[in-house]
Length: 93
Picture 1 (cartoon, rainbow, N blue to C red):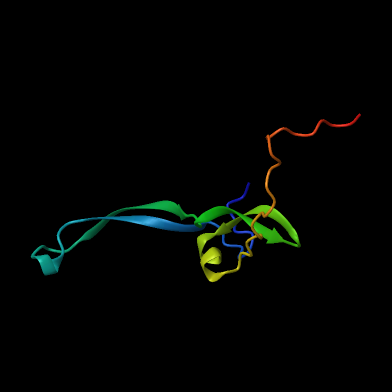
Picture 2 (picture 1 turned 120 degrees about the vertical axis):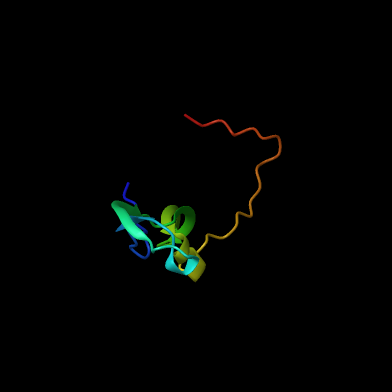
């Protein structure tokens, strides 16, 4: 399963962590120095939500930004209730 938003196409991006040591000149030091740079990835904030897609209700993986923008159409709430007694009708053969 890919880490990609189904609506916006947002995917992991490459980046790096920059390690610094020393005290800033503003704070009375001799300045900070880069000691190491390591690779890392920035992942999209994917959420699994129930949505209305092509007239059908199904689960999709979308980023939080798409949900906030209102790109996800939520399905209507269920209105029917379970039958009294909780028993399921037997299947006919």
